[in-house]
Image 1 (tube, rainbow, N blue to C red):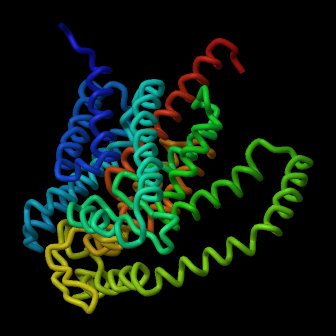
Image 2: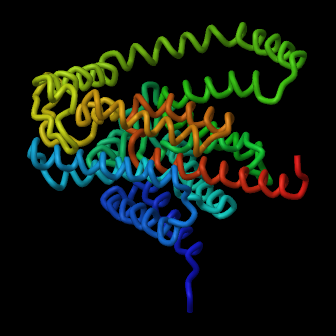
Length: 395
């Protein structure tokens, strides 16, 4: 029995999304998800050379030789651990090369939303169970269990609303954004949007709500509107804002007050540690401490030795790459996303994802790779339809 390349790609993509969203309770097996990701890249590039134009080949060569320099610098100059170097090298390469992987839109949509809806069901059912069967004291063993197993955190301030910040939530707001695209048709679109929105709230991540708020404002105002409709919507939005601004400001103030003593303090500490560590001398500031850098610094908050998990993941990459390499890396990412994702609405969704991901460890990792793969699959489908339309009806 011969298995098609398309079937293998679908299986590998399903494996990536499965282990990314089901880290509760499969956190201990997350490495398998990375194996699926590497397999997806390898299978996708097999026999693809003829499909890549000359300019793209030059870009891939630039990425290859630059990445070899990063390996040389990290292993031979900085003498970093080969296992740590390999981990971050694979992330960096996968982030860049993922822009040349074109997944089939129909099967990608079904696979992605199956696992996202499953994650939403887990959150909603868990919220109901905690609300009905537990109080502020009796739920604490559950919270300690989740923290001990590395599944995330579950907590409440009032015994009524439980924030279920478990691993695997990061793609829920992104999925919510996708439901507004015409490319993605759903039988029960409004119900799906409600489930995703409620799950984003239950996830208890303030950055999720900021990303959704920005998405709503700009999508609602500027998506395919003439001037008259835009004026009408601005008036309606102004009235809504007038009545909702008070509760929103109160919620925002309470959230920031709660975070100021813990989460924001931790992030400020991490920022200072990572930036101070790379300023050892001029070379480490320009070229970084190398991929897989072990930040051997202790502060009042924690001991960062052997720590590969930082809430400010972007700054951790800056620590490893330095000013020059970070500039090259982010220029490559920007160039590729503009040329491969291409369409304004898709780039806007990508931007909204960045808004909520940049202050959390949901960027420069497998989560971002999945976001890129899905947006490019939509973009590629649009390009193919446009080419077909133009071939049938010449301009």
